[in-house]
Image 1 (cartoon, rainbow, N blue to C red):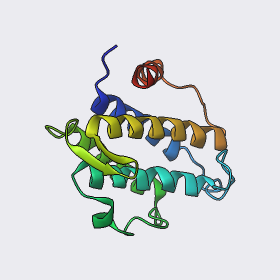
Image 2: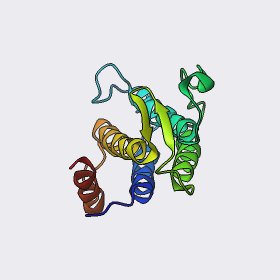
Image 3: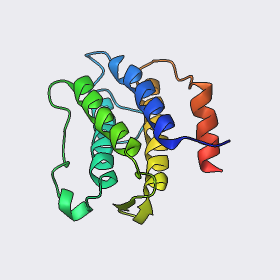
Image 4: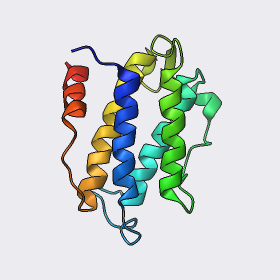
Length: 153
């Protein structure tokens, strides 16, 4: 199965949006299924990952980004923060040449296709984690599951 990584990544971002939007106002401080993280901290991890994808996928280095994305980036509207981050993360991987462009990630420079695949899996898995943590459906879309398996083969 050929996987259009930018598109399955964007699809996972959309699926995770639905879960993030379904978090109740009283659930943000609940403990998540990811030990040591609240639901808010888990969503913050995904959002900062999306912003990192925009920066590194766009050609910046970790040093150039610095500590700008450290801490809580959700502000007073976590869903909007998620949506803003998802928009730029999807866009950077859809740019012409993005799958070939080197990304200076912590595990070495890798082609954009490798980084996009890792971001796809991170968004998909942590979307499931948020769903499980907040009592939402954990059923993943079959197309995303198939893309997941094709990506890790």
